[in-house]
Image 1: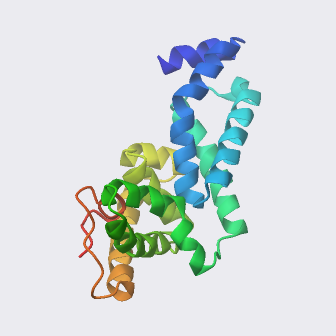
Image 2: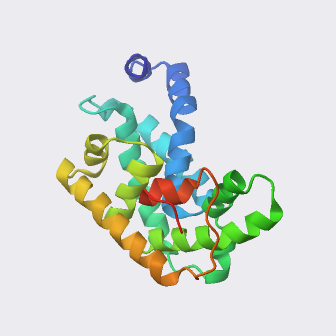
Length: 205
């Protein structure tokens, strides 16, 4: 389906390209959001990515999946945006959209639970953002975007074994950071524990 849309879009069918945008924009926005921590930046990046894709569609040769081509552009733009303001103030972490989305899922409308979870999730996101950029990108691609090691390897232009090593080492680093920074009375996340489970493969304790 995607390949047919790409072929028609390359032939000049604007509606087919619009269909590709509708199909992939949510994933591109989510990827940019996880890498930048800014909904505003993520929205701008998504627009830039599809504009760039439209302008250079003739150069897409189909040697990889269309979405991995989009992902490569997104990663480059998102990492650049992150570097431009990576030292956010600690008091901004409570307003991080990644934290708020996870809290919304796990608190289930309970404001007391939400307040408790927010601290744990802010620590987790802070630890994620402190990872080396290549490793952080790998974690986001595999754990939050659901890419296989092979797909993540194509996006990042590295061997599949490098992806496996990065995931392993990232989990170790995140576990160490959380064990060091998380207070003893920190709450256990809710049933989905979205960020904790998907980023580290284990539940926060």
